[in-house]
Amino acid sequence: MTSPVRDGATPLETLLALLVLEPLDRDLFLGDPGTGEGRLFGGMVAAQSLMAASLTLPDDRSLHSLHSYFLRGGVHDAPIRFVVDRIRDGRTFTTRRVTAHQQGAAIFNMSASFKTEEDGIEHQSPMPDAPPPEEAAEFVGMRQFRAPERPIRAMDSIIELRMCDPFDPDPSPDDLSQRMWMRIGGELPDDPLIHTVLLVYATDISLMSTAVRPHVARWKNSMTASLDHSVWIHRPFRFDDWILYACESPVGFAARGLCIGALFTRNGDRIATATQEALIRLG
Picture 1 (cartoon, one colour):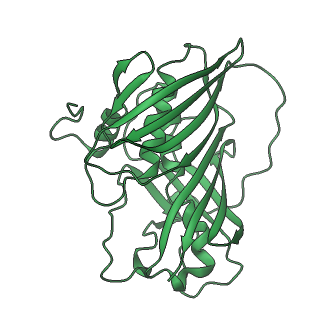
Picture 2: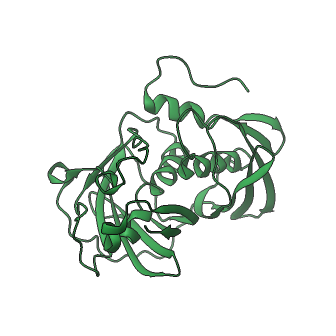
């Protein structure tokens, strides 16, 4: 396929261009994973899969939840084929299943549910206390704990991250939560779908690392991989201002860690919830 990315594009322009899929048939689409080194970022496959599902929807539907499995690691040098199954088209709810294929094998599977807007119950637990993003530390992730010879993939500059709880090289065994602020590093169009897709993309950044915090001293020579990922969208939002991502890992066992993240606007509205189980084999 011809790459949708133009020469000289900014990182955000590149990502937005990669979200434009090529239609091959009524429910079949082709996507460019973009350039890069190492394993393809799972958030990219999830974002493109959500775009593929959205291309088959009525105009009055928006995402309220998705549930997905990472089946194989993706690569950067081969296009991705997205097959959409129209599971249900109801008066209020629409369900789609998307399978992403690369090099002849399924690498990702997602079920997503969309609905029309309606009035109803409202409640939420309060946003946790956190310093404002202007006072939080710049994100460096787990880079300082990796083996020196291990290649480092540059953190995607599209998402700005500020850590309220930087990693401690000598953590407490019960250090099972972290808070971070994140936002898109650039101007976004008004289309709510783009804001939702980019939030799904961003929820795969650093959520897994919450389960590693109590074990950070053993991070060198580790092997990690996302196993599954779910997102619930609770209310409309924009992603061009800071959003607090409050994450916890309530349990880890048998080389698997469960992570849960709550996302809040600066004024305290809970806009989404994400969960992920990760395979974590520490050195």
